[in-house]
Amino acid sequence: MEIITGVERRRRWRTEDKLRIVAEAERPGACLAEVARRHEISRSLLWVWRDQVRRGVLVAEPAPVFVPLQVTADPPTTTAAPDTPGAAELRSRGKACGTGRIEIALPDGTVVRVGEGVGAAALRRVLAALRG
Image (tube, rainbow, N blue to C red; front, top):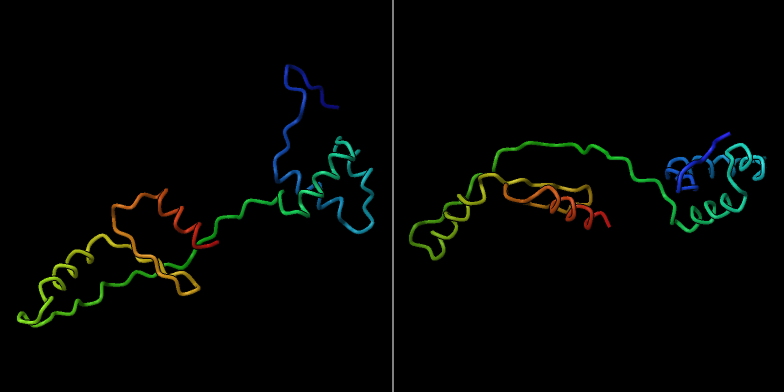
């Protein structure tokens, strides 16, 4: 038996625990009232959690995954003849983007190139937006 003292009288359930209890209630042959009694929650709360799972409101946080990393040398920059228009621009652009650059190629073919000055939070937001 759990005794709750203090001002806060409600238990706080972690998302993982809610999902585990709902999964237990969804098993074939499971009795909703027995599952609720075993976990000392009301049947109505279990119904709310089941509804939230079905509507997609109550979902597990995606587990972090590792992606393959391939380190490659910078491709050689094309050098234009000095007398062609734009040759100086090509040389300066080749020098500027060759240092401190990260290129991320996603499985769907999307490529993200960032410089060394990008923050982790900004990169995380960009990748989250690309994932959908």
